[in-house]
Image 1 (cartoon, rainbow, N blue to C red):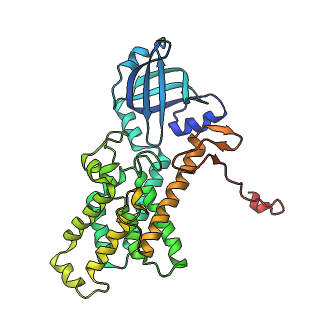
Image 2 (image 1 turned 120 degrees about the horizontal axis):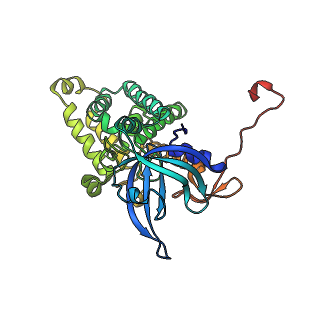
Image 3 (image 1 turned 45 degrees about the horizontal axis):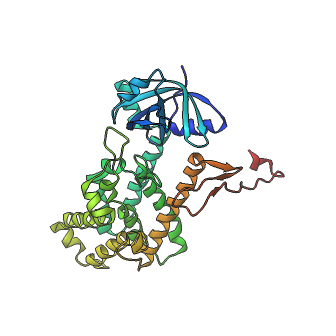
Length: 351
């Protein structure tokens, strides 16, 4: 049987020419189109856990009527030959389609095994990082958040388009930011690592409404709360809601003599969330005014942009040797990284 590959895997293999494969995906959009010459066709956007592709079905294709009847949310298999087209991106030829069975749908929704393992490891890392927070108030907030919203958190994308724009992408982004913060903190001992870790957990918490994905699909919908408020405002509201929940009589008694005072702790956490976009023109209501807020802003930016480079090398159109088209919002065309130095006089380094 032809090998079953994800869209991203097919895209990587197709860089060298046509690859024969099967892919399982969900229909994200489907609509009738017309060429300039008046030839009808269907344009279907397919999505899986990590990637998307557009399938153009011409009116003389054997599956034209079947594809024309597809609805958003349907699950299909496309089996055929795939290649990277210079203008249109990933394309298919000599292909056929069929609907997926229930067990195939469940497997697709779970995501590729490698991605599942990575996101589970990232989620475990986040939980461990939260237990390392010494400040009991910030630790209690983090525990309350993960207890109440873990499943929604694990289905949420870090962005709609630019970076980690996939189910579970927010978990990946959050974990990597925490790793960076933990590595950075010893170099800058003035940073309050407890606050920085808690701020990273909550900085995009509002995206649980702005960018969450449903249990049964890969299509990110639109949420009225996300549209009206935006993820920063939602995150601030969420922290204040959880703060009230953890203010039990027992905790109030235990925390009454802690330094810094509890309300200072809450206020500084709200600030790092509010300031994480860096400037008001990018959506932050306030600019970073503490070391932790500034550090979080740059850690967030660094991880997002490096992810854009990594994805761009796979998905962006090649325009010359080692050069790819610009991936917005990066400032220009992408150029492949310099290869790491290999010392030919040291055989062990070449292994």
